[in-house]
Image 1 (cartoon, rainbow, N blue to C red):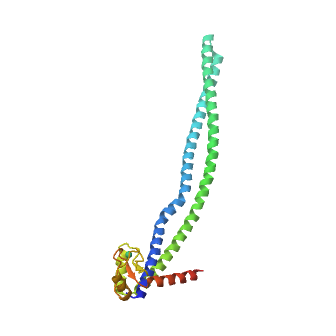
Image 2: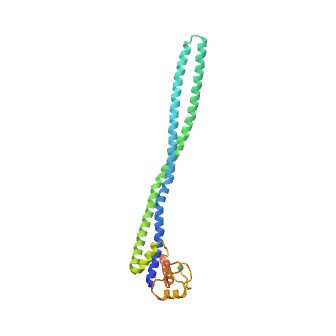
Image 3: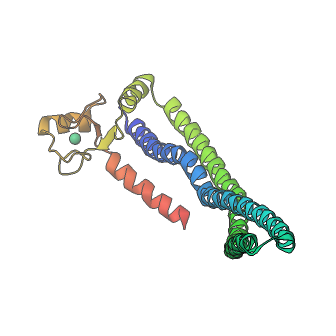
Length: 252
Ligand SMILES: [Zn+2]
């Protein structure tokens, strides 16, 4: 392999690292989109339960009102009967029942009063919750829009990287491209690495035998590190450092 080829493959390798990062980030988006909605959903569910409880309280209030009306009608009848009693025994019986019904009406009124207080507190609580839920719901859409915009940016970057990757691979030979692809497709993130000045593999840092070092330095065949399997090149390190220095100055 020529030095340029190795340099190109190393660039492809860098692009593949970034592509893998981007693909990982892309996979996170669905759960991030769902997460944004969670606070609103929680408040809406809480509000739903409270509104159901309020409905029950209002039904209880209506039931108490009906009972009190019935009892008051009963009191009226008993008072009429009191005017028509024939003897003391009959009068005592009517008075006893009147007493009982009046006490029951008092108890109903106490219960209704208590329920009214509880209902008012629950209504205030529901009002607060409704405001919070609406505020949380209003935040969902812009936040999801922002996230979708972020995803579109990643998609664009990915497309650009794929295009650069393809261009680089088009420029290297068929054989080199096949070697790179077969390594890459088998899940290796590092396919090419420099042979370091001290004779170590630039990926696993295992020492490469002298004989092999010489072959790497002087022949154009594909030579792999015996320990970790990467393709070794003698001139990558130097090329790489220069390139990174250029990158840094270019960015500033
Ligand atoms: Zn190695």
